Amino acid sequence: MQTKEYIEKAEKYLIHTYNRYQIVLEKGDGVYLYDVDGSKYLDFTAGIAVFALGYNNKKFNDALKGQIDKLIHTSNYFYSPSLPEAAEKVVNATGLDRVFFTNSGTEAIEGAIKLARKYAFLRDGHTNHEIISMNHSFHGRSLGALAVTGNPHYQEAFQPLIGGVVFADYNNLESVKNAITDKTCAIIMETVQGEGGIYPAEKEFIQEIRKICDEKDILLISDEIQCGMGRTGTMYAYEQYGIKPDIVTTAKALGCGVPVGAFAANEKVAKALVPGDHGTTYGGNPFVTTAINAVFDLYDELKITEHVKEVAPYLEKKLDELNDKYDFIIERRGLGLMQGLEFSIPVGPIIQKALEKKLILINAGTNIIRFVPPLVITTENVDEMISILDSVLAEI
Image (cartoon, rainbow, N blue to C red; front, side, top):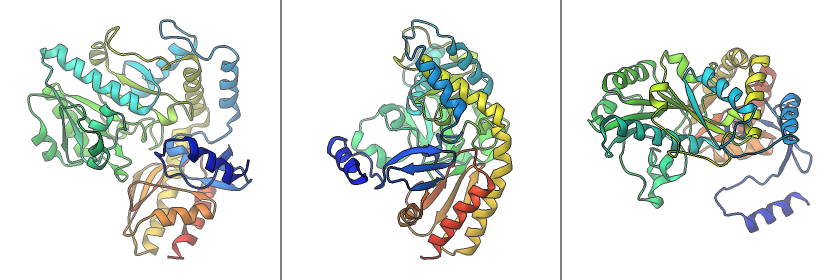
């Protein structure tokens, strides 16, 4: 089939929840994607911060192929050889004690919410607890995750959502303090807000939140689904703030394209969940845990976090140069290889023009271009991206 035929067939049968770009991607290699017509694209989105290792990594592919020939799935009533190793790797990476594997980041958020509520219930026997989330946050589109997403536009048509959620302003300590009551059982936040515009947490803000949580036995839930797994230069972004959450959610690059997520917790909190409280059919099966193990092994082999620390300053420098060059760019912000350029104009047409010039970018809101490339990019890849983007901006 040709591009047009693929698109027409997809639009005939799919529920229309995405406004897809009019290309059909067929394969990838390194930091490049190829469509069915053979065109080559430089990818600075990594499937929205997913494919950290780049495409077609032979060791990763071989690990998955080998597991397919052994056992793809069995129920969670049984162990598999890859399960304990994957659990150990996530626990060691997060600095926490126990982990539950899910099928996505959104499911990890759902599990984190349940765990926080169960912990609070066991503490005082009440069921009227509240969770504080941040305005402009994004945690997912299922009903529980949507309830803690600080964007009324996403929520409006799906009310009523689960109750017991209040919102405070990100990086505003007084706003959070004013939201805390005797009912507060948890505070959930992205260490770097993604969909909300690429806003890193301020160090004093997140450290003070940690202190408040310790004083009041409130759980701190760090959503690291997008900013975690080495994207900011440490395995998890909260490491750079000198704090440790009670619960962390992780996904995206955890499986590098294989659908897997997880929530991890310290021992005190994790023991709140007992058999029958939570479950999953596919989560943690032999196939996805093999993927997790391969990802962590390759992170070590390729020294991914060290590489991010080397390349990210160069990307920042080049984005800053664009900021200085064009008046319609307001600022650059971000952490590591999770960067954003805020514009005074809509970025949709810019992203479309870049795509026509074989550069894949995505937005974060209507006026921010988000840069979340594969973590294996080089300075040469940065130069290529900047050259294409600059040529687009010069035409505005």
